[in-house]
Amino acid sequence: MKDLFDTPDSLDAPRDVVARDAFSREVMAENAVLLRGKALAFETDVLAALNAIIARAPFRRMITPGGFIMSVAMTNCGAAGWITDRTGYRYGRLDPDSGLPWPALPDCFVDLAGAAAREAGYPDFVPDACLINRYEPGARLSLHQDKNERDLSEPIVSVSLGLPATFQFGGLTRTAPVGRYVLRHGDVAVWGGRSRLCYHGVTALKDGEHEKLGRMRLNLTFRRAL
Image (tube, rainbow, N blue to C red):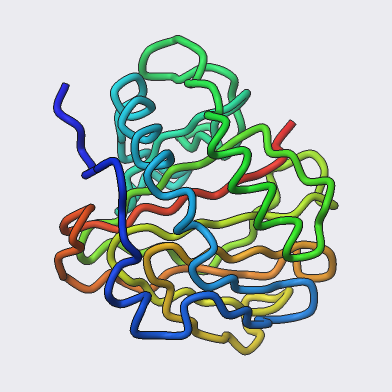
């Protein structure tokens, strides 16, 4: 199978990263930070691992309990994967399309999530699941809470790859004020503690061409699901 993502042996930092303050830290809310460029050191291994995961568990557009087809295509890896269908939202140990366990979490995924979590103040975080979202131009994710995980004391670690996107981060109610942050290739958002159940989402992705991923954005969200 042809690799979906360019994974040369050595990679320089993307030009847009060099041009900005690549490795800064921004506070989005209490217990919620944005780590600019944090994933760049893991990029080569992560893209190679993604090719292997997608070969075993291809992207698919899931159906919400209300019968709507999600504009964001998804797959998973780890001990469990996030699933939505007519019966509800949940985590499952098996890929419903193949009936097989989801691909295992690659070591580079665990290393990236752990490094970002430690820098954000969560030194003991070890993910057991990674949701992989593929955004193509026009795809969006409405404001929502991540609350299907069993232990809500564990943070969320969200890695952005590919085209830039506008991330919305609000409060504990849907009507709370919402901050907006442009996420670029290699940026990592981490939230937990008092912000663990904050509403968040992504506005419609603008068209463009990323030098490695093409006309898409990938989002890896690491959780402690079980």
